[in-house]
Amino acid sequence: MSQVFHRHCHTPLRTAVRGDGVYIYDQNGKAYLDASGGAAVSCLGHSHAGVRAALHRQIDQLAYAHSSFFTTDVAETLATRLTDRAPGDLNHVYFLSGGSEAVEAALKLARQYFVERGEHQRVRFIARRQSYHGNTLGALAVGGNAWRRAPFAPLLTPAEHIAPCYAYRDRRPDETLFDYGQRVANELEQSLLTVGPETVIAFVAEPVVGATAGALTAVEGYYTRIREICDRYGVLLILDEVMCGMGRTGTLFAHEQEGIHADIVTVAKGLGAGYQPIGAMIASDTLYDTIADGSGFFQHGHTYMAHATAMAGSLAVLDALEQEQILARVNPMGEALMSRLKARFAEHPHVGDIRGRGLFQALELVFDRETKRPFDPRSKLDSRIKSAAMALGLMCYPMAGTIDGHRGHHILLAPPFIITESQLDELTDKLAEALDTAIA
Ligand code: PMP
Image (cartoon, rainbow, N blue to C red; front, side, top):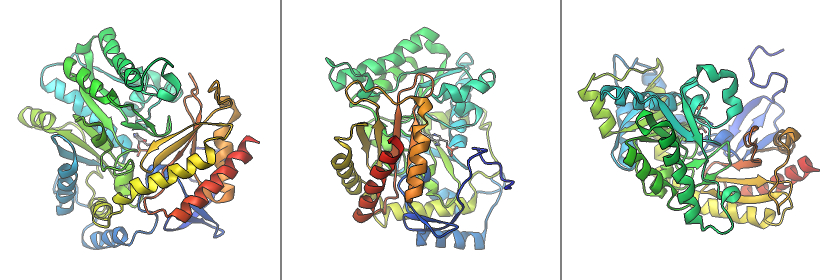
């Protein structure tokens, strides 16, 4: 009996032994095509030579120096590389070890910013239903899944949740996409006015919603309106790019495509590409300067932050994305994936929507295409698809939306950017077979 405390206590797991390109191999030598990048992590596949070499070099030289004693060249260079590319005045990078840590740091920085300005009454966040921001208590509080929050509710920071921008389900037939986006963005203003805008710290959103809604992109104009509302009421905008960032949607930062700037952006998964745990919170000049000129001390930190080996590995990830032109593959391969999905699933009786951007795509599954009625959440369709796909040697990421206020099931696809056309054929064939097996 294994002593590792696995999350699903009763589901036996295969043992992963080796990775090569877009495949992971188990203890029996069976290959699994990684169509989800794990959970949108493995952008470079599982055996990138440059990242592995950089990790070896760094670990031979210096693995770790506590961040209260030293900085390192690799941390400084990685921060510069990120801020050179980040939109607006996001010029200050705080390195952490994962996505939840990055979100947690963002929430605390936002609160401390207002405390330093004497605005102690700002105590709550507004976020969106159908979003995921992590599993630590702060990140959980802003996440949209009420069932995840429920057991811990008394321990959580106050947060309101408004509707996400979900045109497939919520746009009225007589409404243009633009008008729908404005209407749903205006819910932020209504929520602010209900709770009192002077009590709100920040609005938190994933520019492209990942795990909980399946590659849900906002309609044009939505984020511009969100930014206007935040500015009008002096509320900060925190964009969580832990899943959709680092090139996944075709640009290094997903919100570059929305033409807005954020006060804080969080990134993680793709920055480590699966080779090292890392997260980063990137803050604007205004936030940093307020703290630097005030107390001079951000009241947050972790032992492993800015770990030298992680910094070196992530620098090599950025090199691979930019210098080896791997990021440039995302849009063409994304189009190739989308055209295969459309060819295969556009007429499928249980596929209601095919959506996404870059190599971040999803199928939304419905029981009935006309009414968009979802499958019953108790059907466990997501676990049935996952089992069928794994049996066929395919890793995909099926999810049931939220259980309360259930919106349906989807399958998220986020393959490594190095995937080839023939591997996309394999992906589509196996996905179609897994879906039919699970629904039968
Ligand atoms: N934010 C988003 C948008 C995520 O998708 C995730 C992880 N799925 C997190 C935060 C939390 O990241 P981690 O699991 O690395 O703590």
